[in-house]
Image (cartoon, rainbow, N blue to C red):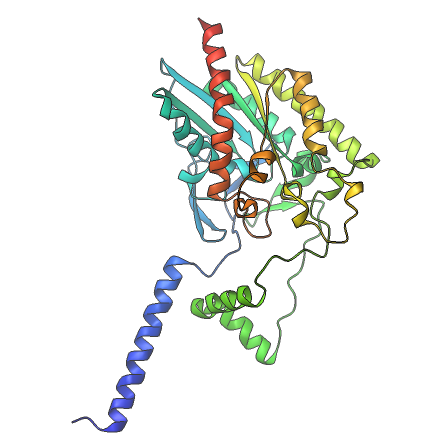
Length: 371
């Protein structure tokens, strides 16, 4: 019969084995690293400053690991051959929202393709989204891709951050560094805070290196801070929703207006129709994302949407607005990642269902003209 000390040692050993096993399972399901790592994902471009590297097989961490693979042209998509008879082809251009920070089957392009295929037709939805792109970069990329893919329809996605991205010319803002990362020429890097000492330093170390501890800490934080909370600061892009734009907002919007017109001109010159998606922003979702002290009379949640309607009318293109559908959802904030403007897989699904009728109608018109 084993001694009491042997039983104690056996018990401690089994507990250690179970903890190690639980840690390994936790790391497999919820990786510790949650910060995107984009080293080697971009290559220089003489006009657009950068683009996604071709034939990439990598991944980032964004609320879980997200595999990122690209085709021979640097698109997060498969390779496509020549246009086949009876296949409707759509080219989607945009930024990281179009690229998708979700697994590839859950991106807007793939969910839209599956939604459209329910009518029995064959569809090819090509994902040409690139992280950080503004409208000028999307225009440059479109001009290069049109003769390659010859789409029936170009879908331009527009988001609030695009208006600010368009303030700068791409090569004045971005550069691919020798370290393999994409760097901004105009934004000051934010240095990491100095490491904490004592018990807080030990806490930080455990949170970075022990997944079970990190998961438990997050769960405890959710319990302590459960219930809706209002932010202390105005949301990003608040000034874009101001009823009276400053000279800066007006100037950036005028340039965006002009660039969207050039996208429409390029698409039509390439034999494609054009449709616009107004992705809005998390700030336009509702007042719950604004501080309680906000003077709501100064802002208009649909300010940017009406401005984009004016552009779409001028270029003769349909404009699909995302915000009304998001606001109608039971849990609108679940369509976004926490404290972030990127859509979750559910958000992409809502937009795919909303966009499908417009895409189908535009491709039907393109086919009737071709006949």
